[in-house]
Amino acid sequence: YQPIVAMRNLAGRRYEALLRLRAPDGEYIPTFDFLPIAHARGLMPRIDRWVMEHALDRLRYERRQRQRGLRFFVHQTMESAASDGWVAWLRDQIAERDLIKVRPLIQFQVQDVMDHRDLALERARELHRLGIRICLIQFEENHDAQVLIKEMSVSMVKLSMETIKKASPGELTSLVAGLHAHKTAVIAPGIDGPSSIAHLWGCG
Image 1 (cartoon, rainbow, N blue to C red):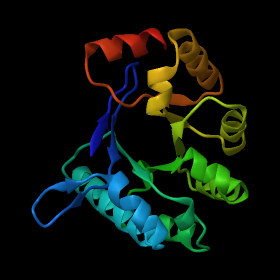
Image 2 (image 1 turned 90 degrees about the horizontal axis):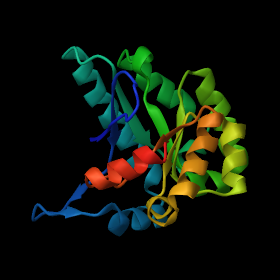
Image 3 (image 1 turned 90 degrees about the vertical axis):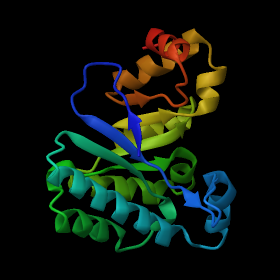
């Protein structure tokens, strides 16, 4: 569970639930080494549900410890969302744990959403009716992505590492300002020290 720290005045605490695979020798295998295999074998729907169930169990536990103002960001794939019963399953999982007031925020990969645009728009409408917000991750500046944010009423985006590394301060400032204008919050990955914090603060 990786913390997401607000650089502006924003109440509450946020964590991104990240999947890790531990080998028999105790070493952790990077996700980019095993998730492509899982995708190819059609395992992502099972993995997504496992991740969601464990994240919700942890959220319920933390709530019982009186950890208020806690929100989890949980990644799901459009392969899972394609199931007719996925939204109802998600609603039931949240209700069973009495987490209606602290619903998770669902993360989708931008490219995954673009590859399944019609389905993504339908699921976004259904999730919004349940009061569940959406975050698009691996976000990069392009016209299609900007249109997608409007169509899906996306609450947050997480920029790609490439965007953080390659965009000039002026380009990054313009991108963030444009997203904020649509009432979309922006998450920046790869914070590794004071200099990166100062750079991102300066870009808004």
